[in-house]
Image 1 (spheres, rainbow, N blue to C red):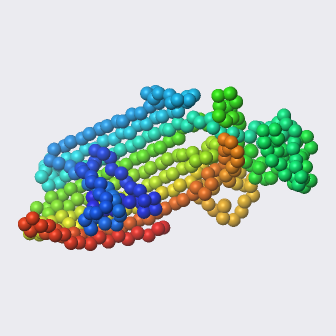
Image 2 (cartoon, rainbow, N blue to C red):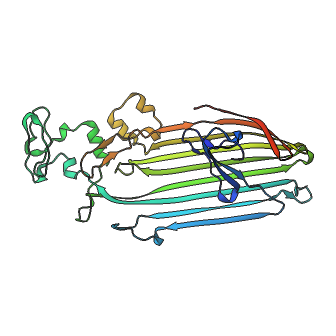
Image 3 (cartoon, rainbow, N blue to C red):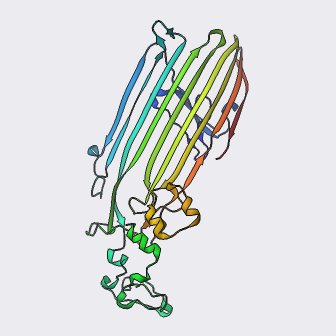
Length: 381
């Protein structure tokens, strides 16, 4: 962006995305192109817009809502959708009456864009244990316990594998597991409400549990730019962009809210550029800047009371909140589901990048020769 790096190295994705009304031009480059654009097989180069001698501004609002949506085939209800994308851009000369007249030499541009999105989920393909089963009571299953030699069982359409007492190798009396045999983790998981109750028992449901929720996606982006004409000393500009992205997602777990994953990224990009014509056919361009995208992927933290009840010690006690999540518990079989928190879902990255570059271009007749260098330094924190 504006000639400097705009890639989050950890995610291999754009660190900041300018609002459409703040982009002067962009170009998609792939395969073979000039050496000054090296470092990647393909890339998108964008140039930010600058202010002009006249004061101009734009305000916009883009709306989507499930009230305008049609129901999809076999869909019992339309998931909630609230999407508002709004912002403004304003630019012009810096002019202070009787103090400073920046027309023809000093210009500014300010841009803001925000996203407020809620994506609904309405899905009935999950199977969850009944409250009786969670309490250890399998007496109402309506089937007789089947135990094969060695205490093993192979389920089928007519056989139902009851829980086996590991100390005796036979089913529990009355097919009821005493609560005294529950592990500490099991008691905390049940008490925390990690297992949702069946709520979709009609014949039209694909499972016995329908998940209905709406997840937010919030973005705030700001850009500030100042351009200065320096006469025979060329021109220069300074740009500062900051963007904050917050997202929630569901990735397998049916536990609400503890099965929700979170992603937060805050990026800052600033740069200074100076361009000067040394002769009628020789131009030098210098750029210096810094980019720092900080991202955190985690989940909804378990309450301190549950952490205390588990009696865990050591490293877990010092984890940040986004990493202090419940275990993930999964089941196998048709429409199998999982509860608890998302497993192995905690990642963080902070890779600040310093960059400066200089290029010298000479035009002679129909030929252009360009030389220069580009230096980047980044360290994973």
